[in-house]
Length: 240
Image (cartoon, rainbow, N blue to C red; front, side, top):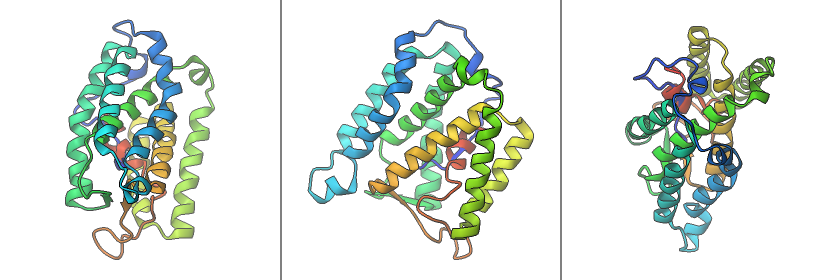
């Protein structure tokens, strides 16, 4: 679920969403969202993986059901404002996915169409990021946002210098523009790490593949690109 993760919930000008507590979430679900992220992610992508498809056992329909059911559950662990954002992010991600994968063809899904679980997966990603950013242990660690920023900038640099990933170079410009406009926020760094995990698992399982030369031969990239997290994040960062 590559969602070129440029985090901008574009329709919203939301500031410090993670700290907005207009309703009381179910706390065991809220913290369970963090613990369940990796196993649920692996299960969903595993059901739609290329190895299973080659054996005739791929079950994308089941991956869709698991993602939707998990999303419905985690909504109970979010505050009212977080819940509103997560729900709105589903159709927003679906449109963005269509543009990035079907129109621009930056990446191609295994069955050459956007799976139903993908937009729900993006909303799950964002929800997980919001919950993580709201943890006291992270909020009190002031240096963490700078550590994460350094990590992502280093990742951009490696992708560009070693793999000549010019798509990541373009995404780096967008990322720095968002940082300049919104400031260095913990949520951005955490979301970047979550998306990186999804990209590595999804591409390794063959759920989708980034095209080496999307748009034109000059815009070379890798699979996945070092700055791929910027495209979910462009869908969400600009407005958060």
